[in-house]
Length: 501
Image 1 (cartoon, one colour):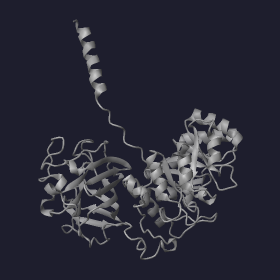
Image 2 (cartoon, helix red, strand yellow; image 1 turned 120 degrees about the vertical axis):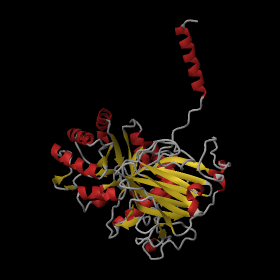
Image 3 (tube, rainbow, N blue to C red; image 1 turned 135 degrees about the vertical axis):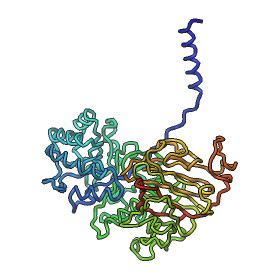
């Protein structure tokens, strides 16, 4: 056999071997939390961007006519001058926020739509929310195909032309994926439709959502923190997860409230809890919002949450004075809501033990930071050999059992994870009995079943770990620990909440 024939034979053999290997399925898509800046219509767009960033939001939908602010004169329109576009992009970049959509656009001519699409492309937008006349849809569809920017048809309450979701689905039937739906769940409820039922109907065409929970079934119903109203927010988020919806779920408040930011924080906390929870728990209604109360009038009562026996609540893990924490003097500080390592590797421990929990937080690392979060440590002097640790590292390997998001030396993340120095990242950990789920920035890194670890110092695949007893026999209660990072490469945490399950 000549060399060329040998190479061909080996290549074909390699293809056969490769084709027999099982290809792991891609991780399920998860929805992203966003914000419609109409929520902050009393503020400038620059101020709204800052507010969104403070809530951990990375994608926003902006509305026509909002005052720009931030030293930029004028209002947001498709005719915005290039210099103002660049100035606005600078504000967005500084806050790590991007404009994903624009709307709601109402009446517009074909020429105006050309300007709108060009405006959207200048910001890299993914969609335009609109309620155009039906006879404009063929023209808009062609422009959307050409530009690559989708158009999401929004539903204001009746008598809006698109208030009926069944009729809207029929209207869109002749068109491709360039036309879809911006599902305003609050307006569905105000029009007499059950939001969950209609969301299930429309999901194949949903591009984005103006997500709302209302306090009652009336046309004048008010927005309330997600999960505290009548709209079945948990059921809708479960439906999005079941259908692997990977788009943006936009927080939008229609009514004014003196505690708007607090409401939005609770909406965000509920969303993140619902995203991280095992799906069966979410469908079963086990995930309750922070400050849950069955009596909507008592959402802001001092004893909120006590009306539902067993309902879990997300609460701040640490008191501002760290009186419920233990660490060497001067090794950690807690100022302006930021828990900061003071340049040592000392671990800050909770003062009490925790069993099953949902931990949600944001962290920021410096160059070459190396930190981690210990789970259920029952033997503090020997925690390195007796407790699981969620690894947090910058500049280290993106994969393997020592990568960020890994259970250190025990389980590698399913997806590469590489936190960027100087940026805030969100980490969510669900620990229930022998199961550990870890999410980083909304992406599930792994779902670990610890019952499979039956040999001390070894993982199921035979590789070594640093745990001196079988991982499957580790205590199910213990302290939570935040590991410091020495020198200038420190680590910070904020928005640290815990829900006991």
